[in-house]
Each structure stands twice: as structure tokens, then as C-alpha cells.
Length: 337
Image (cartoon, rainbow, N blue to C red; front, side, top):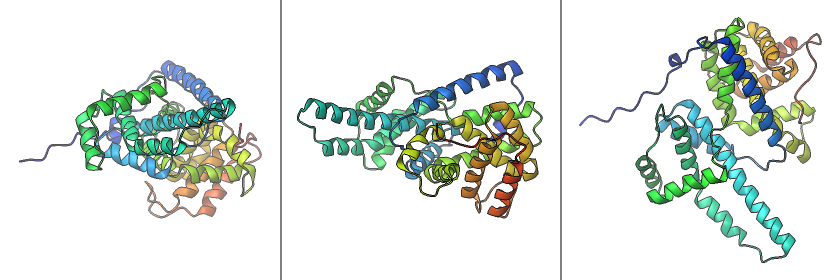
């Protein structure tokens, strides 16, 4: 008997740039900017992060196994991130209330074990919910999810699976259609195409996807190096790290850094032009674009990248970016908000 044919994954040729009216793009860009500003403001004081390499890799591999489009994997990571932070905040809030009211404390070890034991179930629920947001492409059935969990040694019923999805939805007030950096990348590439960018949007897009995957997988190392560069100190304080949370949640900044780094890989001679366009579109200082681009490139040097067979020497990367960010350009830099 023939094996079932797996659904075709969306290819890069499926994406078209330059097909949207300029008025629509302008409205969408304004909406994205307002949405990003709100997200950055709301990130202040947020506790912890669950974008760890092993977690992100698990989500990416599971999405690939289930033939989900790329946007679903990023959406799932963001849903899981928000949900787990909510869980952590609720536990801390309960502890503070009990200390204040001097009531008998709960067994925190039991709560921790409960979170741990349900983590894979919650993760899979987040992927399933994200797939339902793009139901026009493909959504994952309960049977598929239960079979997957069973293969890992987790036995759950359909009722438990539905309850898990509902727990995630209720915890996030049913607000799961969260923004992702990929949406910002695609929007900015669309604008660059209209602005006469020297590097074709479709050519940049392929490299952007690779680098965005890399940043998600190496989230902490990339942003740690960015933090050290921004404060010019190799040992940031805890307070500086906490204030830097707003930078980590700035998806517009990340999208700009991804595109600029992709442009450097594709054709470093066009980097200044691309960075200039990105600055005029977003208002982000060239120095900030260079700092983030450099952080991304230093973590991707040596990797196999499109259009280049040999790794880019780090000193050439740094030299080219610093030359592009001359004193004649707008001063600035990345600073915790």
C-alpha cells in the first residue's frame, strides 16, 4: 500500500511582493507600528522568558512534522511564551497574597511539578491553536495530537486535550492572534519593494526566514550580546537586564535587524541603501540597525547562508557596518526603555 502523501509545504515561490496597493500598505504599516509600541510598553516588568532553545526547537520540529506553514511555528512560540509567563505570574501573585494575609502556603513544589508534567501538553495545545488561526492552510486534528503524545509516552483523552486548549485560551483572554516578527519582516519587505530596494524582496525573504529561525533558536545569546554592546559592558547588572526586556519584545526592531543582516549576506555593498530605507520607514536609528545586524551576523558567521559559500570574517562584518554608521548619520543606538 502506498504511503499517504504529505501536504505540500508552502514554498518561497508562493509569496508575492508588490501585489498590494500602496494605500493598504501604508494603513497596515501604521497599524503594525501602533501594535508594536503597545507590545513594547506592556512588556515592562514582565517576568522571565520561555523562548529557550530546546523549547523553540521542539515547536519548530513539530510544526515541520505536521507540515504547518512557517508563520504557525512563530505564532505557537509566542502563544506559549505568553501563557507560561501568565502561569508564572499567577503563582507569584498567589504567594504574595498568602504572605500578606498570612494564610497557610500552598505546596509550591506540587504546583511546580503540575506545571512541569503538563508542559508538553500545553506546548502541543499552543501549536494546535496556532494552526487553527491559519485554518485556510491546515489545522491539526485531535487524533493527530493524541497519537503524537502517545508516541512520547503521554496518555491523554480528547477531553483533556480540549480542556488544555481552553486553559490556554482563558489564561490569555482568548487573545491568541498575537503578532510575530515574521509579519513585520513581510510588511517591511513589501515597503522596500515599492521604495526601489536594490536587493529583490523575494531574494531577501529566503535569507530572512533562515536568520529569523536562528534568532529564535539563539534568542538569549543574540540579545545578551546586543545588551553588552548597547551598554558597553561585558557584565550587565540585573536591573539593566530587566530594563532590556522591552528591546527583546520590539518586533519592529527585530524585523529591521533581520532584513539588514540578510541584505549584508546577499550583497554587503547594498547594506547602506537597505539600512537607509529601513531607517526612513521605521524611524529606527542607523546605529541601532547596525548593532542588531551585527549581533545577528556574529551568531550566524560560519553557517551556510544563501549566496555565500564561505563564512564572512567577523572583522569585515564589523568594519562594513561601522563604516555605514558614520557620524553623518542619525545618532542613537539601542537603549533599554
